[in-house]
Image: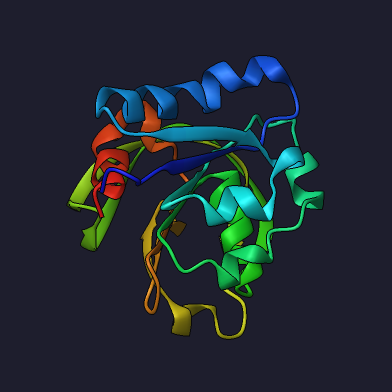
Length: 184
């Protein structure tokens, strides 16, 4: 456990967005006295992936779409836990056949988690800040447990691997989701 290092992938193009979308994740990891490394997606290497024990793919701002042009195919061969948040959620879903659909969501919403999701179950309040939602592709529902709310997929858990992702931003109102992920 002492060699465990969480890789935090920053998808933000604008350096100032780091403080809104990445720093809250860093704060949670530091509060738990765990090792971590932050790398911007533009500088991500195989060495970063190999040296990590788990990955958190952070969200980014509503006007930042650079991440959509990056290569996320490594997700399929990465066999350690991954947590994707918002833009990270979208990239994980797209790699496994999910399709994006334009639907802006900003603000607090209640969702219902019918099954356990990283220690949460039942009705919870979440903070949303997104341009797109995911609609399932051909085999998408065969690979993932999906959690809904507000009429669309809000979170996923892969059946065969430790891949979790949320469309909402747990770093805002549900920090315990991130803490629970850090200890799997």
